[in-house]
Image 1: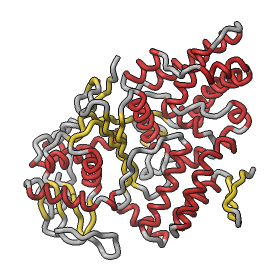
Image 2 (image 1 turned 90 degrees about the vertical axis):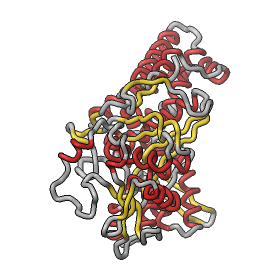
Image 3 (image 1 turned 180 degrees about the horizontal axis):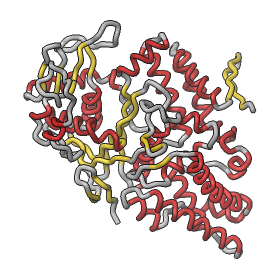
Image 4 (image 1 turned 90 degrees about the horizontal axis):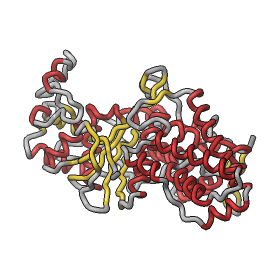
Length: 467
């Protein structure tokens, strides 16, 4: 079966046919980078990491773009509270974000654009919208998008203009031609970050950032646009309206939305205060446990977060690592593992080709482990099964430690930590050389939160793990 993707825009599964043969362009909405990321953010990143890996496995040359929103009211407020510049805060949080993503075995995207570095593209798109009659300058100088001018508005979310109007607030912004219109460029307030534009000094609205950055890196028509289900409206709906009106292209051809992480049936979010940061969870559970938990439910379905759910994921990983320990103890199996070409079972391939069905993929992994244990008990050769197991777990980013580290180190394993600790030390040293002390301190603090202490000396930086 060829790759089938559930396209939110079409409301059905469709065969994936890229715009350019052999290549795939994918844009995923990233984070507004004013604080440490929580488990809800982790689900987006882990889900699309698997999608990224699978597209590459299928042979596509993937241009994966995931942005950072690094200018926003929340960023400005948090920076003011800390007495630092907004850029110092966002640099610090981006460094912390990368620590979390590396721990979760998420591959780095091809590009990670920042909104503040794409002001020319943003301003150009806004100017196009004004020239083509889809935007206007309000009485107070803000630039607003005229929603009713775009005939296809609501096609992604299924919402209708009249229903949106009836549900809008009574106390509307009188500077708008229509209550549904949204801001593209807002006039600067005193002592806030601002950029020059034809409409005066100011900064962009949230929605225009993603339209401009995605088109800048992927073109006016590209393959996949993804993000959390909560972004479908209004953010993604507004992205479509902006990009299509400005450029005339089709914009994204396939829209993928992951289900939300809930706590007690409510969406995990900072605004509700019911969230757990990734670094908090990783103090108690290994990153592979969190990754397996997030992939254990189909990406389009919501998932309920709890310690009990993480314990179930850990128990599953314990079973997989128990099999790996048996293999590590069998010299013959180790030799076969190094000589056999890694392959993927047909059932595993079919599962991921069916809209990235990771629960079915996990079922095949556990079935393979069961078969390996049976064959080891019978003294039979397991070369093919071992190569399949290695290929499957590697692709999903789990069972990447040796068994001894898993059972005797777990989340505190220095053997596993060494791979990313050393890379972070390099990043920190570069930041210090560039006098980016906020980023250097963020890396040090993030490691300290996981009981890893850095020691700077004449011969360089060393590290140790403390109990």
